[in-house]
Length: 110
Image (tube, rainbow, N blue to C red; front, side):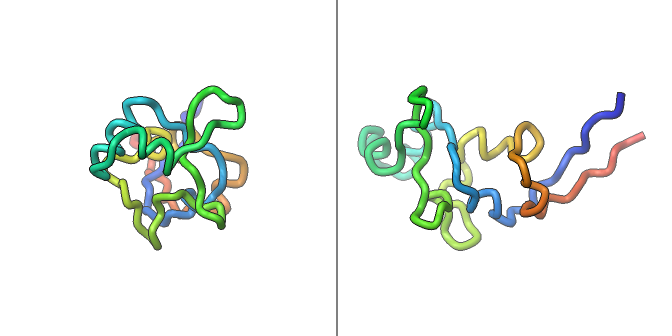
């Protein structure tokens, strides 16, 4: 069976402009709050919302649907970004992602 291709992120930030749920865990909230040097409760109040399924928190979006931490072409929390962001597009993606994502396919070895 052929393995699905792997991709190298080119940091185009197009996935960061796609509205949706960026799920965050308690550990990720702690790391992001510490990175921003703010208390966790303040981080939760200012940067998260209850997920649509009410099973946890997600980062909020900017009015245009972009991630709250996207600043131009840069992620303000790059070094502590959520695992969901780190995993895109190899561990998860969304319908139509290939139409917007600039990631390059990594040639298969062998």
